[in-house]
Length: 116
Image (cartoon, rainbow, N blue to C red):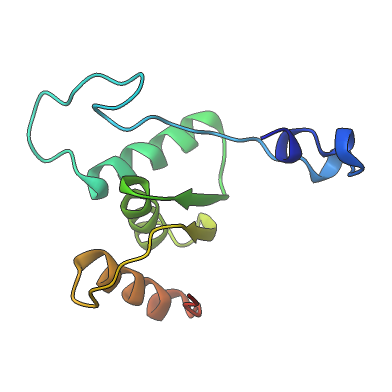
């Protein structure tokens, strides 16, 4: 994390620094278990978009692996005007998997190129 938040310590410049926001998922880490059904990746993406609004971020980069890959993908798909970049570290083998279909829709919608 320090390479992103304080690059000047590693030969970079202060203006290259990032604010790093790492929200926990409902039911994981510091968050309590959801009390109602339907708290999936798409819903959590709307919560994270609201969080970024409240924190004052109009545009941002998102990254996700495992469950966060789905949340990050939905965030980029639903808010393309706000998400400047999407990085995923989840690899799926089945092309019929819903998450992979979302990735292809996202690429089509935003004219991004998917690489593996």
